[in-house]
Length: 397
Image (cartoon, rainbow, N blue to C red; front, side):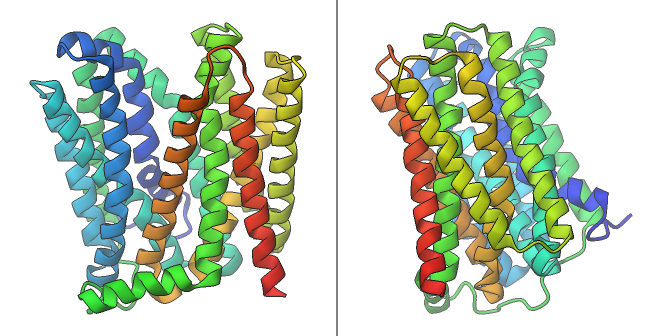
């Protein structure tokens, strides 16, 4: 059976490709204490299984984008998902923490193919409002991953051990390999046979970096992701360590904010299907995101921080992320349609760089006593995203 572009099954397939990173990260979180005990490793070394996964994910996108421009999306997707499958199988059999860390790096690299080529496939097959609608619905499917992944990881630990988590990820990767091989057609219309030649490769990336529309929207997306990831990295510190909520309550709050992303993405899809201009969605979402982040800072600075005061603002903020992201990414890709793979790689790399910076700032500046730092860093990235977009619109007119 072939998956026809625009169908529900095709959207789910693209969503699953994009969901590989959050599934891999969040399913493994509950296993970190077990890994330290089982492999006689330090907490720092166990933490590297996440850091190296994200590093591999970020770096590999730079390679997979041009490779897909040269050889097509389907074969590179098969290689990426195959690497993801093999690396997770190796992680499940890891005899030492160092072996596991290396395996996680290659698993991250394989997962990078899913996200970057999902964007390229959408750009290949859809135009205008249809592309933004498709990206919105893919985002809805992808957002389910961080909602269910911790529960899946915890459930696997209840019935087996931490190795079963990576075994399950390997099984999922194998299913994706078979699904792509049997059910997905090649989407690229004209392969660039010179895409991997040094001059063309460097020239393509220089063109992307110098294209005001592409790099501008890529930066808007990166800053918006930094705002969202500031919440992801800071929420356990603020909600559990400072406000003292239980792990079960934290899971519920995290799920509610993920529903906020889904709601924003779904609304984006519905409004794009009605041909509402993307500029209106982006402007509204970025202004509301910055406003909610500023109110978060004010609330935390005045010492009235409680779950009931934070939660509505966090849901509004994540809702805005879901609303604007599909539209921002489409506008970035629309600027350089002839090199969608390389452009997708640039968008993904900048997004991961911003997320890494945001999480590092939260971890480094958190004082262990106040909730201020998470809202402040969220506010910084939200305002940076709004200012960058405003500059784009100013120069446009």
